[in-house]
Amino acid sequence: MTESTARPRAQAATLRVMIVDDAEETRRSLQMMLSLVPNSQVVAMGTNGREAIALAQHYHPHVALIDINMPEIDGLTAIQTIRRHQPDIICIVISAEKDPVMLQRAVAVGAQGYLIKPITAEQLLSVMERAGKAVLASPTPAPPSPPPQLQPNLEELAAAYAQTRRADDEAVAVFEALARQPDCKLRWLMTLAMIYIVRKQWSKLKALAERLERQAHSRG
Picture 1 (tube, rainbow, N blue to C red):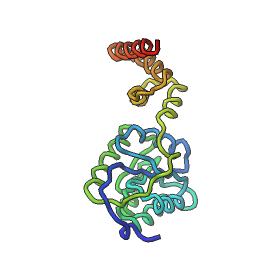
Picture 2 (tube, one colour):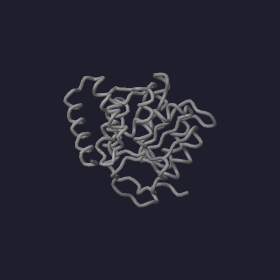
Picture 3 (spheres, rainbow, N blue to C red):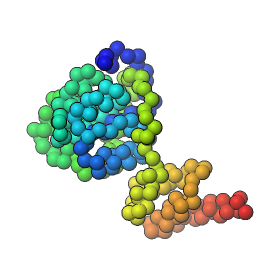
Picture 4 (tube, one colour):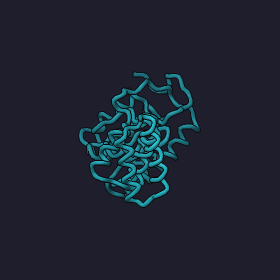
């Protein structure tokens, strides 16, 4: 495969993200949180450094979130290889430990960010904002279309939050995003109403109740 410099380049409209971590829970958590980041799209996920290299060559992401300790090929070696052939990719290291020596090694191989587990939505959003500015500041490769099954799914995320009865800010953001869709299912509106009750957000509850009443009248 030719290097990225051999392909046409164009300014990015959507931030394309690759997640590589051998822990399924981390991959899923990051994918869910990224569904809340504006203008971002998860285009590929992998479980080890070898997959990271192959996926980067195939999907040409703008940003790669890569764990350090992984089987077959570790994250730092993968980043070094990816950056050698695709220097435009912004690589963000994921680690369970804040080791200064490891951080220095990560920077040395080309990592441009460092996220410590457990990763919060605020930390991820901050990193993605910086990455987005860096991507928009310089031209990036025109990517192929990503496979649809890797698109973040708000309903899948909402179902997981509803099952665990989450009522935090992230859960509210997901259910409110669904509520803004014209064809939002009644179950998500009712779940959002219950969250508003738990959080004592009465003004939002009133507005939602009025919407539900209008919908009931329109059906009748």
